[in-house]
Every structure is written in structure tokens, then in C-alpha cells.
Image (cartoon, rainbow, N blue to C red; front, side, top):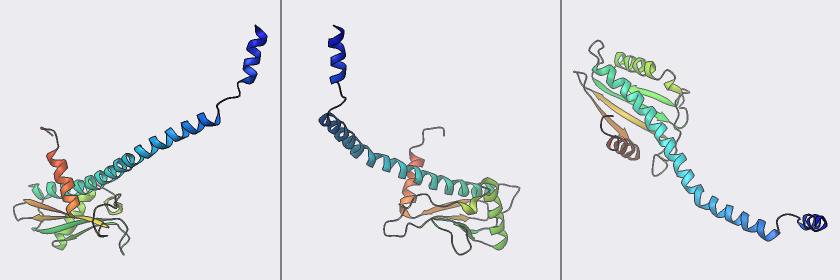
Length: 171
């Protein structure tokens, strides 16, 4: 009986080549099916991060404009986030309005996002025809502290509007 068991052990040399090829083929099919979904999720995550960064900066300006203790001069302020740094060495820039207003807006954003000037785009899929190197928000501040925000490009506007409409009630 022991000789039979020992002989069987010696003949068992592992998996056959056909078995290994079948396993590799199954793994390749699974990777082929799952890789595109994984890439979509990664890109959606990058877009969410970009939209969140810009929204955080916009919210800081809106809160500052609405605060009764601060005064933000009326005007249009633009926050732009780029993929690469501009000539001044920063990928994020705030422009527009008066000099005093611009200083106040930069201060308000810096309080919320201290390193906002180094915020870069994570996604490169915002535009349709190569104009996907930046996203921006135009914030119109009226004399009473009210704000109106316009996002561009269109894909960013749709992305932010879609997030706003899919939020659960009470949030």
C-alpha cells in the first residue's frame, strides 16, 4: 500500500501545459473586461478632485462676499486651474476685479486652501478639442455681496450641475 502511494506522488509533476494556458486565458479575459471600467473610475475620480478643488475656492469667495464683516468690491473674479504652470510658475490663478478686491479674494481663498496656487488639474478630459488644459469659474459679485458663478468648459458645468442634482436631500 505504501509503495502505491509513493509511486503516485512521484508521477504527480504539477499542472499540465494545457491547464496553465487555460488559466492564463481566463485571467486575460477578466483583465480585458475589467480594465476599461477601472480606467473610467480613475478618470471620474480625477474629475471629482478637480471639481472639488475649484468648488472649494469658489465657496471661499462666496462666503467672504456674503460676510457682513468684510467688504468685497463688486466685480467679476476668475479662478483658473491649469494642467501646467503658467509663466509665473503657478498652475492656479485668480484674476479680475479691483486691486483691493483681488487681494481680498486671494486672502479668502488662501484661508480655505492655503496652497491653492500649486493646485493642478488631475484630469485631462475636460475639453473636446484640445482646450482641456484648464478649468475656470467666473464669480460675479454684486454690490450687496450676492454672487453668481459660471463654470467653464461645458463638461465642468455639466459635471458640477449633475453632482448638485444628485445630492441626497438635506445635504
